Image 1 (cartoon, rainbow, N blue to C red):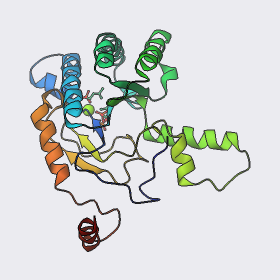
Image 2 (cartoon, rainbow, N blue to C red):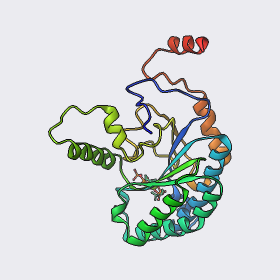
Image 3 (cartoon, helix red, strand yellow):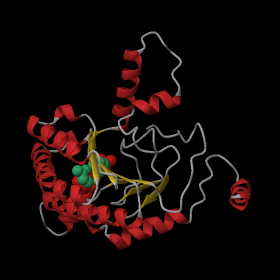
Image 4 (cartoon, protein in one colour):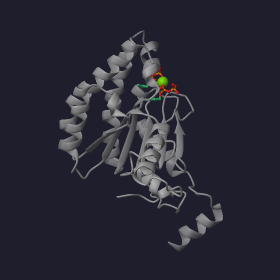
Length: 252
Ligand code: IPE
Ligand code: IPE
Ligand code: MG
């Protein structure tokens, strides 16, 4: 199923965001402040993921997308990269059964070809196992980059129909790695930075942005509620005027 593009038609807006995308940032600083190794921050970050997944299920969110490893994170020291990979394997091993039992569908998107065979196989098997679950869809973005995503979509289109030069937005959106999800309603970044860091560049066109100084391991259900409260106070205009939105609300 493909979803309408926010720039092609005004999408429906609901009280509870249907899709929340999060840059889980600040694990390293959380640990450093406590004189702990950075990896401890990543381990605690996995606990925070569990809490946010539960909060999304409770609130009736349909899609939760988590930035776990960016295409630029390979620039980190080799030791941290390899610890992150190992943590990914352990977390998959531990969490997939629980997710499956709770009706959660797991997806992993990004250029997975750079991961070792064992990890690739674990990912494929976790996706297969949870594929027909109808609850929350949790997408983990791993070796993901927004530019990579747009380029792989363009290349797929061009390869399928050589010589064509008039592709539409909808055709491109259908080739993005998260074509199964609507565009995020709410984008959250923890850890104090206010930047997109090459996350979902295409899909964030009309998302509401929420930044918090809270480090990811401290992002709990209360923090999650604050983000939702902030979202619910926004007026999503998609290019229209405030008066038009009020008129539309009256009419419905
Ligand atoms: C986010 O936390 C997790 C990953 C990028 C894998 P960081 O590791 O970026 O933590 P800080 O930003 O250094 O505190
Ligand atoms: C973004 O965080 C990527 C993830 C959370 C996985 P970074 O910590 O890598 O972002 P920058 O480098 O501060 O922009
Ligand atoms: Mg960071």
